[in-house]
Amino acid sequence: METFNRILISSHSGWRWIVLILIVAAVVKMHMGWKGKKAFTDGSRKLALFTMIAFHLQFLFGWILYFTSEKVQFIDGMMSNPQYRFFMVEHSLMMTIAMILITIGHSKSKKKKTDTDKFKVLAVFYTIALALILAAIPWPFREALGAGWF
Image (tube, rainbow, N blue to C red):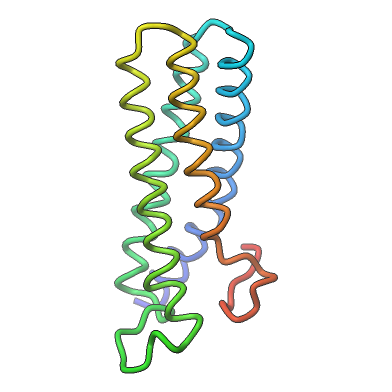
């Protein structure tokens, strides 16, 4: 089980960079399309879809870790431990909300009739999700969380 957890933690940490690149690219593209009144192309649709799929995979890795990682401990006083509280409550809750926002944004955009409306919905939902994701990542400069760059 320990080897499995190490592989999963490495996958979760490494895949985060793919998700971040995709969501930043999607947010930039959707804002440019919305403000520039551009055509919602097949490339725009695929970027939004691949971003959602990549995040869903990351989310799946994370939920498996939630039940197998040593950073999640259901013990007395866990809320007074910054690392346990972060991973058990803050990280998991913010990432769940981000996943819901990305999914809803993608779904709503498919129902919109105009290209501008498609870009607008994706831009708004993905931007809010990105802000939550950035706040919820255990960045290395947050020493109390015991996380690294990979």
